[in-house]
Image 1 (cartoon, one colour):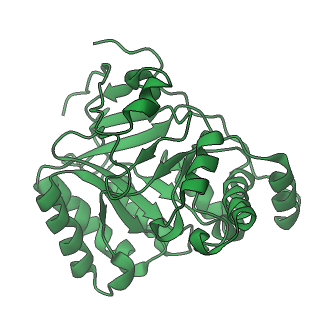
Image 2 (image 1 turned 120 degrees about the horizontal axis):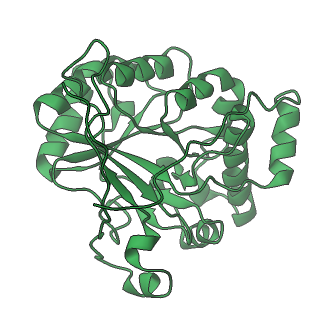
Length: 302
């Protein structure tokens, strides 16, 4: 396999709804950032037929845009046959490292939405996720159903989850958030918008948390992708059957011609100092080893 040439080009995301929102902000291409199209940067060690990463999409989360057709239909940045892999509820011993190994064997990337408590309990595992180059968002502090909490309680769940990731890693990560059980309210979406945090729903839920056999998870994902043709896929690195299913699932995605898109945020999330300080104490005063924020494509040309 010859080394691929990195090229980039601007994108135009089809506007299907929320036209007023886009008009009151920057142009659509500016809102959603830039798209770098590239083949795999080189051979995947030990796997010349790896799934790899077909494209990297950078999203400007100013104003808190939402993604995933289950709840947000304003934007669609995926082409036919393209897939975004997402994993919720980690980091967790055994399961998350197994998911990372499967992704590494295929030289591909995903978005992880960790629970804040789990990040504080297992910062060393979350650091493995970051070191492997995956995108990391947040998924509340305790996975509480925010629709059942008061507004102040819900905001605290969000902010503690965001800060937990920063404290566990020693630096903030992506300004992406996913609601537990995908349950949100207009008020909380407005809050995230003011915080410039993008919300991810999904195009298809694997429902892997309901399954006990890896074959069921593989069938769930592949059959839904065949139906929809593309999409953001929700899975859980907390679930053991998912960690067992992933190696074969990735092979099947490759064999069926799907291409993986990695999604990054243009800017890291801005955490709130009061929650950072609270969680630094909970972790024992340490903030982990800091690492430089990875640069992303800024200038786009054909």
